[in-house]
Length: 146
Image (cartoon, rainbow, N blue to C red; front, side, top):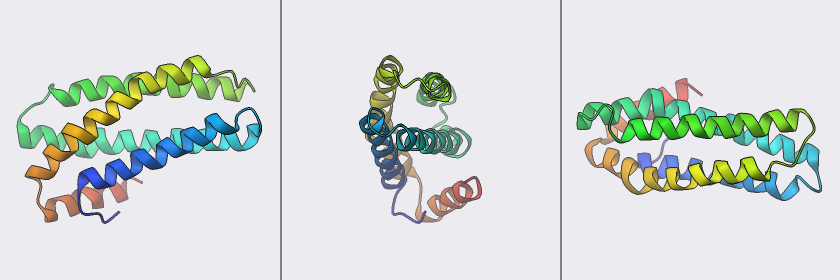
């Protein structure tokens, strides 16, 4: 987890998760077992990503910028929406239902702009005010929570 910046690390994780979700969408009509496995891995990874943000990264941002209830509050609300869609898709898959297009559209409608805000604004702001030693501490806490 040793990367040069918060933005690089989290953007890389977004890309990894996006690929898993894309694989789920691609395979759900031809290989349901693999599609379901991809979705489970995507869901677990995204939930871990959210925990890292809410328990480690956002508090650091709020401390640095003195903005509790500011942009990170919007991110937390979006996380709750994202989790609702993840759970709805997971519930359908658990019942063997792969018609999840509506839930997928809802998820992407929240997730895509959410990731763009993080990568374009939030993560770069954190990188600007966080030195290498502090970033190393953030990554160490994330490793401990993995």
